[in-house]
Image (cartoon, rainbow, N blue to C red; front, side, top):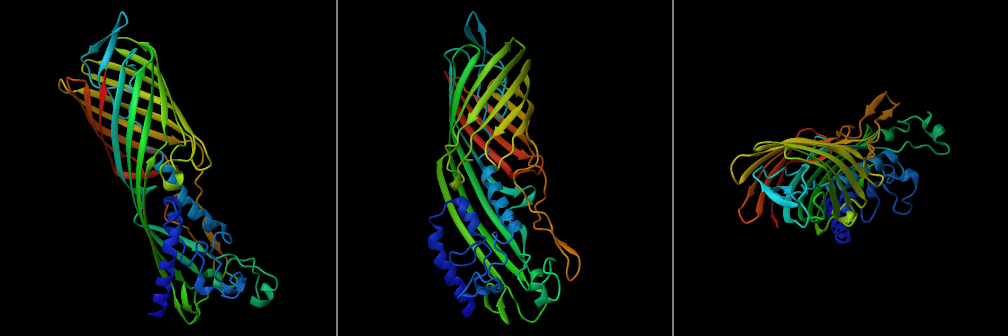
Length: 444
């Protein structure tokens, strides 16, 4: 009971310092079980008079001693931060379609267009579309692994110091010599992440062929996290590594939780679309947009890096139905995000005078090997050959393929009401089981 009370008081003392940290830092705090110490530092195993002493065991798991452990913590933190920032941006076009006769826009009785895809039409000189939309998601998986059940395994430093071989009568270069190197720290991590993006946007027709616009996102992020850590000693009657207690009566488990929320400006986007070809049936256009690092990445409100994308757009109308294909490339700055090849295909169908059904497959395929590195398996040599995998998270590409299904309701006075759902069709990246979007826009 005394050991449990001591651990509880230490965590309470640390909580006041954590309050000042951003959400990104709070994720890192889930790996700290001591008062102001490094991640994975074992204050119970440290020599209070000389905690840096290699024989005191307190620092044998910390990232500065074991680079693989640091890589694993960085992977979790960076994967969450990078993926939250890549919230989808809706279409630049409004719900109404127009053709131009002698430079005058004439409304066409057609579908109201896609929601998370682009069609080739521009809105016309002097015309404006303004709107506001809200996209909400409860992030539930990382590369297909449930965020409420992430398993991590942190391994011991491969200890080697002057005289080590003679003390333990074997080569300390081998993993497993001395025997305490076989101790493993297991983490079970549970994360509850909710992200809501309210986007205020506008598109203006500079000419009949050229539209310009912007998107101003307001992001709300909330986080609850809990980590349960257990140390598994590898044999013997006493423990070398523990959170509290003594070698003969150790505390081998610990729990940590964090909570926090943030609200603020996300990454502002500017965009332009140029019509290459317009006819009654087919339209071809080029689109470019850029996202600027205006969101606070320490609070998980933005990426902290510039990004841009370019798209080629082809759309064709067949009576009340229109089909479209978008293809392009996304550039993402920084050392934590990969570029992506973009492809979207789908249709929008006018199912009544005021109602359009829109359906798409929206994809972003990772370019190159992931910049989010998972550490390799740890191979033990002594007392027998075995391998410990550091995590249950698979080392796969963060390809993102979503299905988009929604409706647009166009009113007689120029308003368009939007509802949509995005569902994942694969398991790459940080994903929600369902992402809702609602919005309203006005064309004039």
